[in-house]
Picture (tube, one colour):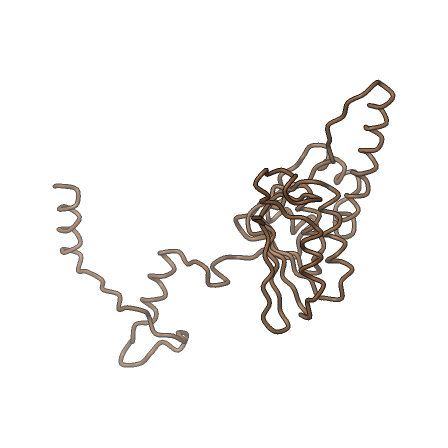
Length: 240
């Protein structure tokens, strides 16, 4: 059976990757091929974990509220320092799981989405009214995960939930849902071409001395063509 989560450990540190739909039971959830994330599977993985720190990487559109709450509470109640990171999307039930972290990090290119719980219902008028009342309770309880850290008012939270709001990383930090915004460049995962060229130019020796701000030599020397040669090459490129 496929699964969209994995747990990796290295000494006192562990990384949990949740990359799929949140369900209560695998195989019968959102995906017929069993590519789901269930709390039972994660709890079993965490039982024998001896690490002191865990980073939970999330990329999920969400899923069943029951599954999301179970994973959230498992992480909150375990004697371990939890850091959660949105690697793509943290929506719905996955947004609840994200709130389990003491440190909650949004990547620059990531999305956080919250809304009220929803369901399918059938029956007579009385049964449908009860379903709506029950749904209000589910939404209220789930929102406690956001209330624990938010810096906005209750009225503002209710508005965000009622309108199924997609939240930018900067807003997530400002409103207390996240504790930090992570830059990919700051962590060495990518660097713009402009910054790369700048660093390599700054690394070039001047007057026989290395630039003291540079700790590592450039991977390859930067060759800057004379203006006339650049002009000639450009003309060849455009067919002039």
